[in-house]
Length: 200
Length: 200
Image (cartoon, rainbow over all chains, first blue to last red; front, side):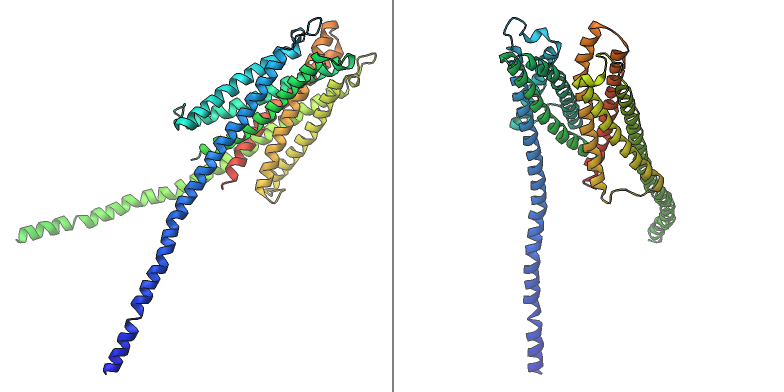
């Protein structure tokens, strides 16, 4: 009787260690579950951060290219029928380059400010996303329009003579095309952000 | 003691009717909740349907305008230095009008087919949304590029003489601008759909 009592006790004692072992086995998933959720949020934050930095970099490239197009076209005066302001296409290129420089400059300033202080300039995130998207998209359309309008003139001028005036015009147009590409991708990213924020 | 016992009973008896009243009061919200969910789904379906029909209408307008631009520019031959194929800008306009006609025609055909049969042409909804968005966006960029490129030439030709050749060119260019607007809005809608579908 003492032996059976001893054996039940012996069999009764194993469960507690096994249960404690289960508890020990359960605690790691519980601890893992915590970091799992946290790491999900962290991943989302990182993605959000990457998106912000990527869109800042794209606007930076856009600013650089627009500024170059602006400077090259504005200094494109070589006298004697070789001034940019005698051709309306080149005036259009210059006007859009100035507009794009102002827009991308303000956007880069705003995003750098937001990244450094962590505060939003606009109170409504949705308005800010709307502004980003429509601004990028409209400036991208204007940039490709201006660059396209100036290409045929440059081609026909180059048939006559290939000089520093046509070369400068061609480089300003190329810069506008590059600015267009970066703003088109930036519009893509901010459109994605806009569409996802309206339902969050 | 009986009064206090009676009053608790009296206060205890009211709850069952009030509970049954609550149940009766709760059932209407439950019944309302059912149609509420259903009406939400219905509203979502209706919105989805409206989006599909709106995007079909926009592509239809795009198809009409591209087709008009194509026909007007292709028939723009009046001999003696007034043929469209003597100017590369007009050849560009014609090429993009053909491309846009083909693209919007195929898209309209596909969407009409999907709306009438209810089956998707592409197995993956995401691929179909990607194709819609990138197709619309690229064609919109090409259309504004071609229209912008041809505007300065038409302006300078009109300074010399304002005849049927320049008028036809101007109307083809206007049609391309209209096609651009409808495809730009269509790209907006399909971009919205794409961004929301990646998370559903």
